[in-house]
Image (tube, rainbow, N blue to C red; front, side):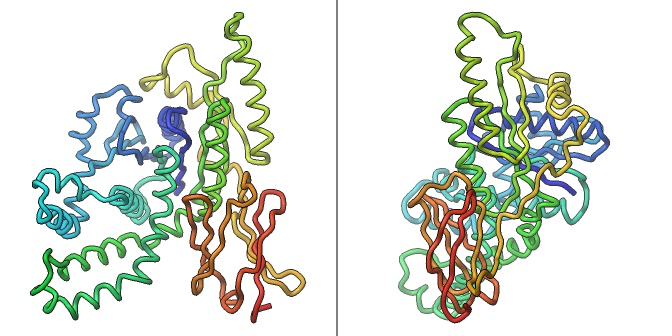
Length: 397
């Protein structure tokens, strides 16, 4: 089974490319599913069908579009009912008690992360059933995509560090607190719902971090602002331990696009294409020209898929490099993390029990440390080319 993320800045063409690659995979005989991770779904628009028709026919499940090709746009309301029943009901009740009307309370009770976890549940279900050979994930813009991939680790941290304590605390104190609390308290069914969800996610984190199964393909345009966003995305996906196996440059002006007006644009794009290839080397870079018209419907998408990959099989892993490496040099323990485009002063390190917390800007990653690192503390860090090397000192050295 292969899982491929298509992600990048909003508006770079992720949906068209993921749909084109899906059709190409199906043409090659793979049972292929394209899933939209963006709640502002646009797969139906790319395939030139009515979104209401896709949602009504699929009812939030996969809908067959062509031979060996399925498309799925998640119905969040249905996911809340199927997966979050007791949790969603409790949050709605709390908001309703606080004075909000029932309709508004139901809307505000959809917390960040609920949609992402629902999508992970689908992916894990397909992994277990082996229903598809390839799952292509049409991602939301970069920030939301990062929240999606960090969700399994965040949930695992909550379940190991907080959940049992919280559940036992409420179990003991609930009879007393019910008499004095101004709001309803979560019942045992609330905690049972969360525990059941976590059980259904078992194995999905290892799946996403297996470079033989899951890779990321960054979609970008030859524009300065978009390239900067792509560089940050590259760094953050490496931080979360995912393998980036290619970069796709979309909407390049073709050679036949001539004229005085376009001359400067073409020169600027040529400069940025060279820059992208240099920035991301040795990760393979693929280029797509801007079409004569918008690409909508099966025929245009098939042509796009063939233009992008030619005779190559799009399910290949085109590049692999481990984002993490634990080593011992001259008696000193070190952790090496691939973090290209990191600038001095951006990183903050903090040790918490058996984890190293690496914070870059508003994103943080909990890196579980091997047993040999448990008695040492981070003593500093340095950059070696595109890798952050964290040195440890203490009892383990």
